[in-house]
Image 1 (cartoon, rainbow, N blue to C red):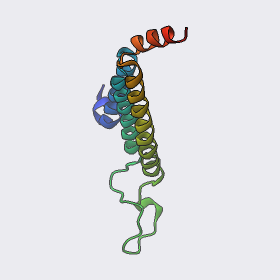
Image 2: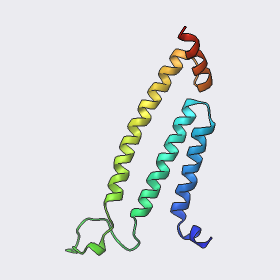
Image 3: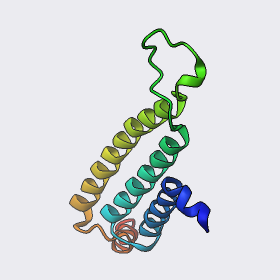
Image 4: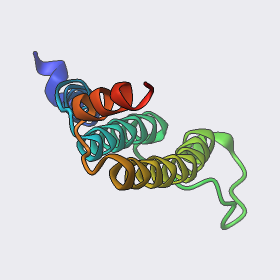
Amino acid sequence: MSELFVNYEETAAVILFCIGFSTLLLNRNLVKKIIGMDIMDSAVYLFLASQGYIAGRGAPIVTDGVQEVSAYINPIPAGLVLTGIVVSVSVTAVMLALAIRVYYRYHTLEIDKVIFLAGKEEV
């Protein structure tokens, strides 16, 4: 139990991921599903950033002539987070654009109604 309080960043990331996943599964509205995906993305980025942080170390920029590896954090998690954020924003934009198209066509964002109306449309 005490490890939960030591690793609070990881605990918060897992809780956020669960909130996003349950939002994705339990809501029928497409915009709420997109918000759930964004919450899950944020949880993954928080987890990666917390894994890349090491207390007492600085950013991997050589200053004052210090070139020891043990003086800096690993830059790969930060690079992964930045790349993931760019991809996440792009995917969110595409999902929102598709949701707008679905709304224009079916006049609803409820997935059950969209499936029903799409099934009637095929005939």
